[in-house]
Amino acid sequence: MRLWPCARLARIAVISVIVGACAGSPTRGEVVSSATQAVTPTRATTAAPNTPVPAGQPLGRGYHLLLDLGDRGVWMFGGETAGPRLGGRELMDTWTYQRSSGWSERGRGSAPTATGDAIAYDAASGRVVVLAFEGPSYESVSETWVYDVSADRWERRALGAGPLAVHGARAAYAAKADRLIVLDEFGETWAYDVDTDTWTKRAPASHPPGRRYYAMAYDEAADRVILFGGLGSGDTWAYDFASNAWKDMAPPTSPSARLYHAMAYDKKTARVILFGGAGTGEQPLGDTWSYDYRANTWTELRPQTAPSARAWHSMAYDAVGGSIVLFGGGTDRAHFGADTWIYDPARNAWSPAP
Image (cartoon, rainbow, N blue to C red; front, side):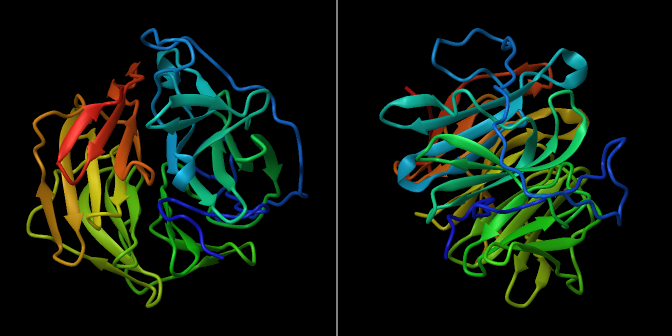
């Protein structure tokens, strides 16, 4: 079985994550378990957006998740209307985006009761998996939710052993290995095997220092997971599952250090595209870069038009349009937007979605 790449996992009974980053959550080394559950989740939490949006459009948000569903378009889940100390609320809504028709709300009447940082799509079964770490009141939780795209339905799945320190972590699905790769805040590398429903600590000889709020994307042509940045970091790493080896790429030129940025792999050019993020003092950034693994080069693209500087946004490859879709984010945690942008790598051009 093979899954769509880009922060992807898979299967019906899938991932479980225990988060030890917040008060009241398990400490490192604890294992928590529970029986398999199939429940009807409560309705999505909603809140007034920072700026008005037209009816039938998603609210402005940050910390949300975007995913490529292949010919089904781009999928979005959750996020926050603003930071928790700024009057924000969690969003548990589900949307899909098609270039031809725009945004459409899905999952009406049901949604997860928690949100998270990592998602995956099982193309064979048509299901999306969300690793959830934060509840509607910003409490620490450990939940796995599965969304059936065709049935437009959510289910909660079993909890199991896996990485504990994943608050602020990201994930990438290594398609050739058929594994989900996660780097936790202690710098430990974990791999999730979809077919056996098991987590394995990989323990490579060297690895990136532990971090949060980095970005990862799977380079399908090179069969490498590419990691850049994170809290206090501006380094580039590549992970090869076959040899269980991380490599500090140390390219001659790189984007500046940042966190809360977004990356997506463009299949047409075989490049990882990066946009924005928060720099020193959480100053929003508005630069666009591409990374070529084989040449080990970052190139600042400098398109004539681009989204405004921002962080806390999300991006995904749109297989239908052959482009990158960006939604939301903002200049600070109190001002998250509801704008959609399309990046065409072939023309090096950003344009607002019609």
